[in-house]
Image (tube, rainbow, N blue to C red; front, side):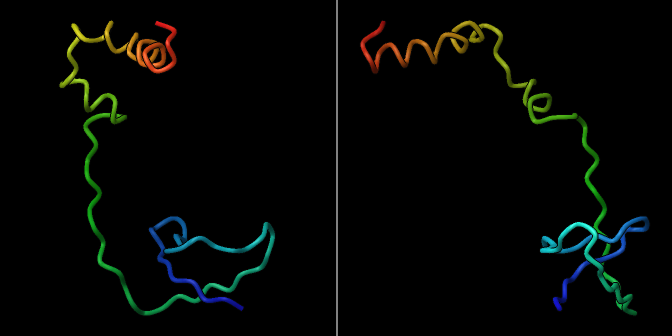
Length: 80
């Protein structure tokens, strides 16, 4: 038998670590009279890191970025 820590988020049980159980393996869940401090989630202003970094993009460098890999490989292996 194994003991894991976790919490109930209002709709599902969340474990603090990965569960080393197999599909359809029975578990016993014990509800304690203790609570964890709820930390409010940050509100995301964009859907991805790419979107959040777009404000720093320099469109004049896009063409150089597209060819940077080919240029580097050519310089390293003499294919330039």
